[in-house]
Length: 341
Image (cartoon, rainbow, N blue to C red; front, top):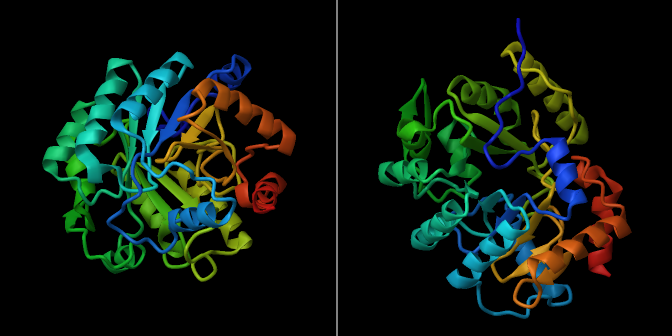
């Protein structure tokens, strides 16, 4: 059997050389940008509620009451382009498609500048029309699928009963998955499904992974690695994590993919988000990375360029390694200690 590397999501993964060159030249590759804090689901493992409480209780770092304006957001994308940004990832704090007009306005700006837009969405607002528009606008999409069993998927999204389930390729899935595949996203480098691994769906992960591979979808799966609403009863042990990492690695090999085995919070061939990136929250606060609560500036008072320089200094000061082990690494625990003092 001939082996190949798995397909990677367009705009979200970069080669080691590109990352090293960008850091050496003081450039950014990927900008994480949030613009709202509202969500129509209540996933029990969501870290955003914890984050908001942390920001309120610990030194009250949010001084700006207002969310970033559309003009401010467009300005950040323009600044990012000058720093070398190749992709902008629109992610939660909230569900980006709750403000569709703003989202597509920002996508238009990205496309004007030759930047790849990436959308992380729970999919509840994706119908056939939106799926078609996402495909036509060059957007890489990361949807959600926590289980192939609707009752488990509902449990892990807060039992809101918002998803509509349809039959697709012998299983029942949330309708946005079918709409996106039928819009043209199948067997492309522009569609992934994100699965958070918990005690509720742990034994189902290999089946989900194989189903996604067989249907031309890039599988994303992450263990709980951020403080969240309910961690203890949903988390799995380190031993189970390592066992699943190895199992998925072997499964991919059976499917014709091969890559170095890595034990971390992300399954498969994915790397840590701590690349040449910068994370901007909806109020303009810049964070060290999605897995950290260290704030490094405010885009309303600091340029992206100055924040980037400060970020690199902090990483050196605390020995930040971004070695894909997050909660198990000393640097992660050190960031928590530093922020809580």
